[in-house]
Image (cartoon, rainbow, N blue to C red; front, side):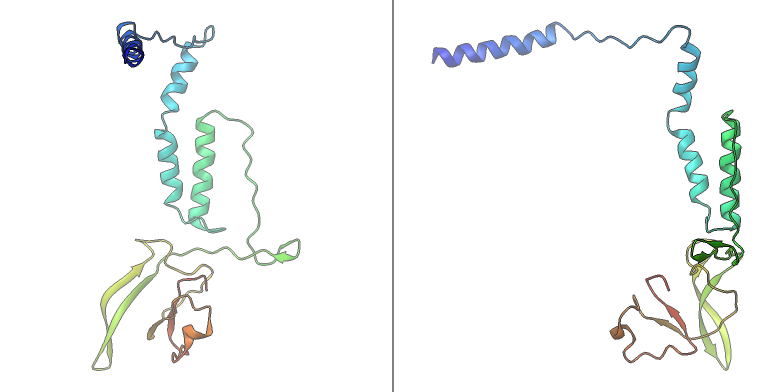
Length: 184
């Protein structure tokens, strides 16, 4: 009993001393004549500017050779210049469909100017827009990459993943617009 009491008493004294004698903290010294540099770094390293930069870039559809890709590259170059970095170089790789890179031909540049997908209803032989399903302006990833331009009015078929025979059982896709959850 006395042994338990003495251990408890010792713990009580230890914890009490922690509160009675506060810890001393020592800040790291700023290197000689570097106060201004430390202040500038403190203002920039908050993460806010990095977040704003990333927000701009992530809003761009950066498919090779696209307008969004070019905007992103130019934005990055401008920021690097704003940060007084020197020797900035942009390496342009052709997206002409002709230049060979090893064993592969460069793919063509691809950009989307406008795209909408509407559910339509045929009323007395006239197709009428009923409900917008998707559009490029709202979600710039709703168009299959490398797809071709066109104006299509067709029945819409959803084949799920579309990577197995069972996805097509009893479904005729000929002449229809096909949706898939995988890359086409």
